[in-house]
Image (tube, rainbow, N blue to C red; front, top):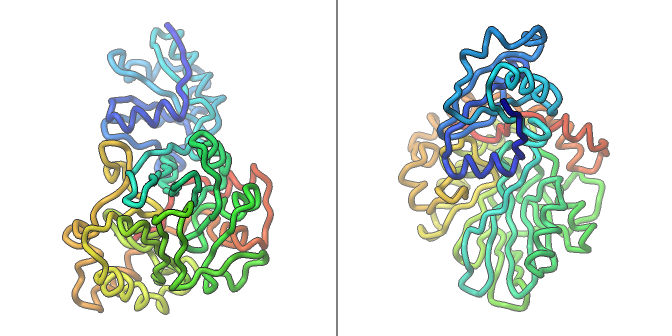
Length: 375
């Protein structure tokens, strides 16, 4: 039969379109359990590559012939070898180009909407990691928020739409992935903004974000207003875009809230987290569309692949926004924390400018899902 290649972009479109897929994942069992490719109608079989060195005879009957089959490994090589063996056994299968490493780094731009003041806002979905970043564009000027380390996606996209990147923001000092904010600002000669309270240990220059910071884009009426919103970090800052969108960073997600412990300050920041969610956000207008910095599950994606909901919907449906008893809230925040992100301390220090790992080390540091939320 035949073997063909599937790219991360093509796989992303299958997820957005809710297409069925059978995935044979040949990584180790622990790696598969920790992090896998998710889809609405995906089926899985995990058999480590080393168990298949002598052939695929024992599993071939479990590989469907009436569904698309994708073989996945860490970097690509093992999946090609297994795919070839399955082809010889009479199956048509695909392998994922670049493996899980490519899956971790793929970023897909999705248009969120038009702005009242003229312009557009785009969400960049890093689907393998659940990371979300943004570009706001007006009159050929662009602002990027929470950029991934793959900065070329923003440069190329801005070039395609004929815009110049003028400002780069980070909502907070990230601990689950390496920020591309500073590198993107240097590459495009943009201004890099970060909360002063999150920047106490950074070793580079930045423009301090303050509560009253407001910038306009492209000499239009499109504005970005900073809203101090501590709790995930002491300097976490949300942004209100054009009085339509609330970029919540890692404070509020679609089905969960942010964790306060990744700087070792869970007990100290619980009250800040509650204050942000239950007072600061509650005082905002209900019709703001919330755009977070992460998502946790594939079913949080909308039909077009975006991740967004009205603030009023989240106050009605998100459990983390509906805990009246403060002791119960504290119990949730301190006792139900997920495992900490892989290499999170190294990532924080890299984002402070204290470490300068090479590209391969950065990939290694980011392996696995994001773990920014409490559910």
